[in-house]
Length: 115
Length: 111
Image 1 (cartoon, rainbow over the protein chains, first blue to last red):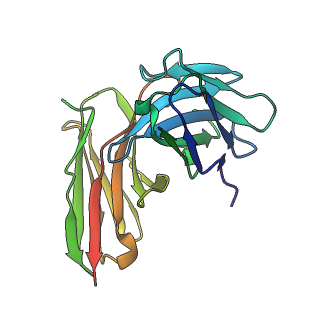
Image 2 (image 1 turned 45 degrees about the vertical axis):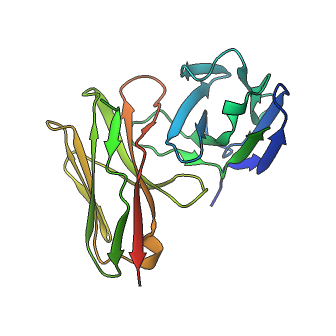
């Protein structure tokens, strides 16, 4: 079964550094998402992306965050200057359509630790 | 009021037991409803979508009550492998199908 893949599985970085989290969505999917989960808390929506532009973003997704689909396969999340509170599990997800009941497929996540 | 509210548990039940989880949501315009499961430090995985008429998938039954803004999940004949956190997930109407997750209900099935 095709799957969403994310790299790296764990990223440790110092406060103030830039990080790029990478995702390869399922190949025929058109809708792409980033979610995050701080340890012990709920999964939170960050941003959705379709047709090479952001569709929606949450209040978490401030100017320090950006997303890009630089080629036909990768979908990246960049955090420009990391803060301690950015430490979390970051999940990429993709979907085939906007259809109300079509599921999202999540990648296995990147654990980001900011020290 | 939280957007999606769940009893955090934990629920500790013996193998073979029937267990039910409940969830309430605040946005009456919500259009889509799901149950996901999440194993410790893993990604959420879709368990089942929840339809207005209620639906069943093997040992799992989901119900939706739009008037009460309430969703339920029933697990019959629970297995050790059912141990996980069960996430109630709601999608509001709108363009991007943003998912709003509950905090989850932790289930441990004991031998």
